[in-house]
Length: 108
Image (cartoon, rainbow, N blue to C red; front, side, top):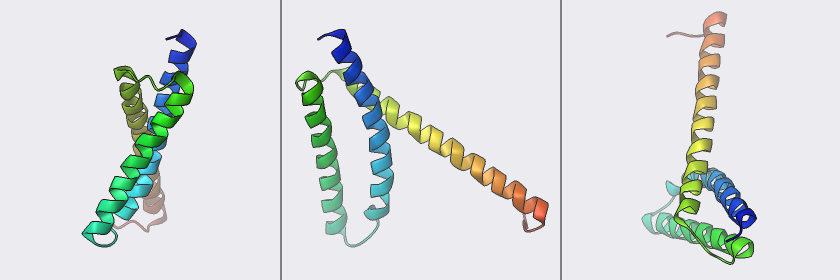
């Protein structure tokens, strides 16, 4: 495999990990709605759609050749954006507590 194709595949895998995190947080809202069969169908379709989307785009980039480090890049992208969002959420919570404590609204 050519180096440019590998770099494109790795960068796509990283950004797909980011996209997968965003879609997972969106799907997380629907996991707890409805009956068991509804939850099961939503999760199966979610996983199937994400896997198919990844392989369709990967087929366009490098003829569908997959390596172990592509999966690692998906995981790295997922964890990177997860930690960035959680860090921002924590900063926002701390700022809100500071603002409330300076206004006198905070009872903690």
